Length: 143
Image 1 (cartoon, rainbow, N blue to C red):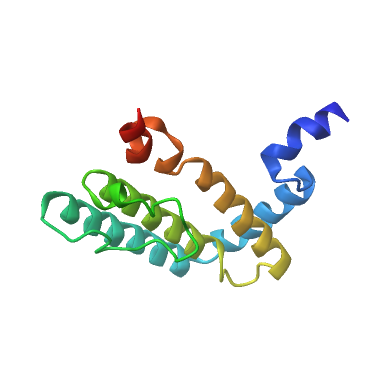
Image 2: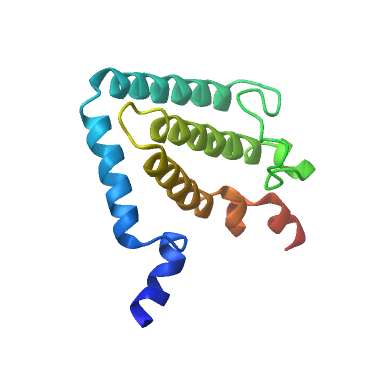
């Protein structure tokens, strides 16, 4: 019971076996889809280039990607200012890329796709710049 209780927060309450099998299904189908892998690489390069260009140029806040209306993590006005806006956009671009990488992979079962997409999103949410004092302008302002 202790082992299961320890693993539950790490797996979002999913069975570690189910999570492993879902990732194996996703990864094996992605492995055998070289065109999709190349598309993902090209998309990562494109988004990285956009972010790099935005970091040296004067761009409007949320010019690359804006948070979804239900995403309140970056709703404070401070998130519109550099460098925080750039960090938030970089995170949102990565989050979107991972969504694209974990969905619509031919051959992956619908259930496993949902598990992989959910688990990956949960892992990414932990890394959001809003979760760290030094990268969160709201926390810095209050401090």
